[in-house]
Image (tube, rainbow, N blue to C red; front, side, top):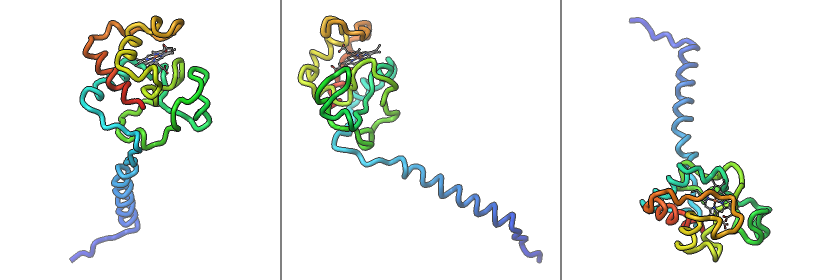
Amino acid sequence: MQRPNLSYLTVGSLLFLLLGLLVTAGIPALERIEPSERAVVYTPQQAQGRAIYLREGCWYCHSQQVRAPEVGIGTVLVRGDIGPESVPGDYAYQKPVSWGTSRQGPDLSHVASRPYASTRQWQLEHLKDPQRMVPGSLMPSYAHLPAEELEALVAYLLTLK
Ligand code: HEC
């Protein structure tokens, strides 16, 4: 009977395979983030609204990430308290996350906590005609979206507290 030829190469490749399996198995564990108390489990309508937010590219102009130095001070766009600093757990149920790329408009992390923007009515009117609600606003109108999509978008915006 021939003895198995366990050369260094064979042992080496087995170890490499094992390492690969361990790393692959570990990746899902790394992706799991503990949800913060602000993390939202979306209803179907809110999830639809979030998908529309991504589809329409709202994130081109709006961030959803409050940084430590802005807390209690605000940004150039919204002075004062813009809400608590963002933590990884805020995004636990978001895939993909919508941190945004720049701020042509205010950060929206906690927009529904601002008293004037906390109602369905204001959000709906603002989406349809931003300039009427905020004179001089550079935000485009979304009045062309179907009413059902606007409602979903508003339902999503109202989760941003
Ligand atoms: C071209 C840039 C741009 C795009 C795209 C854009 N916005 Fe805006 N948005 C702004 C600007 C500028 C303001 C500030 C003036 C105002 O309130 O209208 C603003 C304000 C807002 C506010 C009020 C924020 C506050 O703190 O008062 C909300 C809510 C909002 N946008 C939601 C959206 C949603 C939802 C979309 C996508 C459907 C969107 N925006 C797309 C530029 C943009």
